[in-house]
Length: 109
Image (cartoon, rainbow, N blue to C red; front, side, top):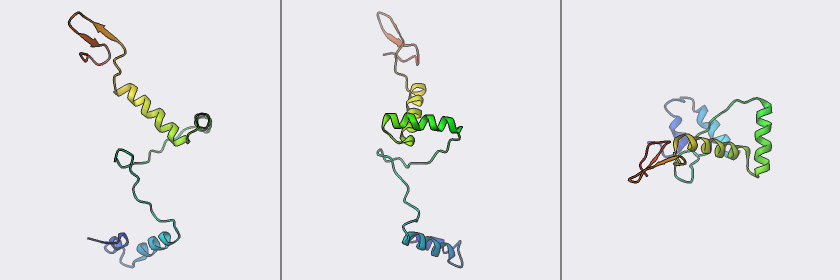
């Protein structure tokens, strides 16, 4: 097992060019950063979304109005929407003398 991440190139890089490029980038402060991790310990992955320029500018203005980065704004908005779809908040219920049942997910409350 390689102890230095540049040593891992030995098998697929017989001339050592990739390892040298990686070292040069690291020395210049441009190397690959370690995988980001969220506060709950999950690895962070990148999601690319294509939108019209007008939509991007609208999101950018909304993020500025909220005082957050556009990336954080989009993350929060999509996570909130996913929660609305996936995590029932039991807002509509049927009440019986023996039970209260959520109309959204059928859970007995």
